[in-house]
Every structure is written in C-alpha cells, then in structure tokens.
Length: 195
View 1 (tube, rainbow, N blue to C red):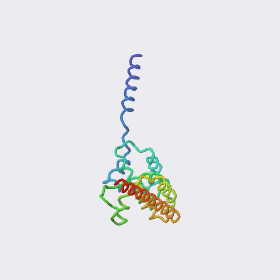
View 2: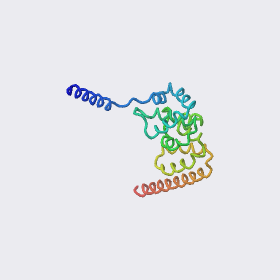
View 3: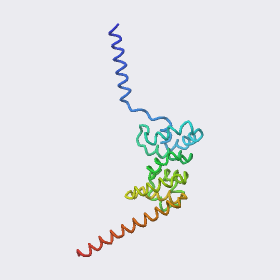
C-alpha cells in the first residue's frame, strides 16, 4: 500500500514538473490579435464587450503573454486602444509609438492617412486626444536622442490640439537644431584649420 502511494506521489510530481517546464500557450485572443488575417474580427469582438476584456489587455501592455514576436500583438492592442480611446494605455502607446504595422520604405512622404495606418500606436494617441498631450511632450523631451521614435511622437503631437505643448516642443526642437548646427559649424571650422 505504501509503495503504491509513493509511486502515485512521484507520478504527480513528475507530471507537475513536466507541465511547469513547458511554456504556457498564449491565450486565443492574443493569437488572433497578433494574426493580421484575424485581427479585425478580434478587435471588433473586444470593442463589442470591452468591460470583459479590457483589463486583461491592459495587463498585457506590461505583462504580455508568452509569444514571439510580440510586435504583431502590440499592433492589435494599439488598434483596440484606438477604437476604445483607452486613456489608461497612453504609456504603452508612447513606448510603442514607432511600432509599424508594415515595413514600408518611407511612409513619411505619403498622406497622413498612410502614416496613421502604418503607426497604430501614434494613431491611437491622436484619437485619445488631449489627455495624451503632456505625456507626449515629456516623452519627446526624454527621447531627444531617439530620432526614430521622435518623428512619430511629433506626428501625434502635431495632430492633437496640444497648443501649449506644441509650442514647448517647437521651442525645444529649434533650440536642439541650433545646438546641432553650432556643433557642426565648429567641427567644420576645425577641419578647415587642419588643412
């Protein structure tokens, strides 16, 4: 009797260890939000009953499910937050503002609608509107060295009615450009002196 109980306990421990070591399967909704073919239907499903799913989606912004790559899921999350104008997602959207839906060569020379489509986090920030102004300005000030992320941030700021913030960012940019120009001119002067 003792032997059979011991074997049963060992079986349970082994089974638990095997199951614990296996990575958790991402939730079905996460898979559909990350799948470009199923994404639209998944977004509509969440929008139809946001109270049921929004807390989980907001949790995924800081603790995403185990899946690789995460970028397609983040695109789906940005689309949901765009639809629902989710103010609680502003930090996530700013952090992922440069996330592109597709790797088009240069969308910046295209119409605004193309830029909005290709940068879903920036689009969501624009739709959320003025609650995003101050966090966007702060992010721009902190990300002075991240040129790739600054452009979508500026795009969002300029499309929202962030009057005071837009003026502050404009002043910051002009000052930044002036400093870069001074650095460039002094470097050119040094090069001429060496010749």
